[in-house]
Length: 357
Image 1: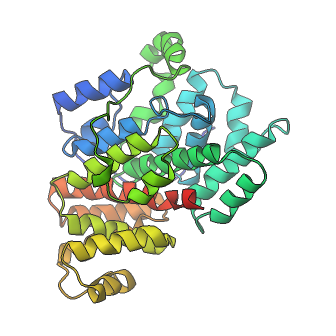
Image 2: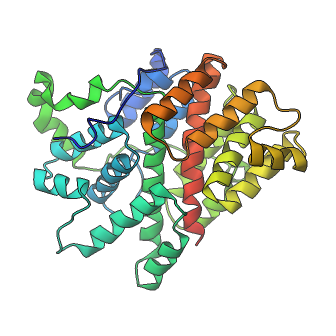
């Protein structure tokens, strides 16, 4: 029995929208059009990040695809994301991972013959929980002889899935498309072909060759990951997110600052603080916004966004979904969707501060 089916889940706060050009690009890169595509198509950067973070497309150098998918499952379970958990569980079953192995992952029990995998997944969970950000554990693993690149890639994949989990959980994406996926007659028919494709890393790659890394926000993370190929798609996500027209730079920076402050991600907080000052807030306003989630000069919408951003750090799904519904009522649709994307990305970025250890 699936372990998250009893998690309370509200009705979806997003309406599907068709963007044929975006859907063609997503399908070309992934081979399918995932259900979230039509819910986030009004803010294309969100789905472009969704694609760039897909483990079958990530240019991973130190962990294999199956390990990345194990990380996806345990992080989705850790965040109580019924949507992503069902999707990741289906992927593992598709590619032939035995039921007892999946059950072992779910119960945090792994075969004793693979202690390295057990350590990898424990570290991934600690990145997801970020209570606190596990810098000491990162240093311990490296001191014990684990390759820094491997630890950084585990942290990166875990952070990517905190992004996915929030994209699905915050607006309460409909569960019907994923929780009964394996029961569909057409899925049983196509399962061998789909499984064959899923077992192999994709030969497609997102072309980020023209990206100017100097214009990317939070550049210290790109610098920390500079020896890994994942740095370029990550920089592309940050750059495109920051250029989206749906929200002001001040609102984006406010989301990042609140989440960084709540997680104790001091470097991200300093960077977001500087971005807020650049966007017109003074130091006293920023300090008040972080301490009280309000400050002189902040609009009612900014106060609502700041409070919602705090709610996304750690949550129970139904409660944060109700918080999202309240926010939906005070923002325009594109703004609301963009806030979902920005807060999801900020949670990933701030947790990735672990790679600085």
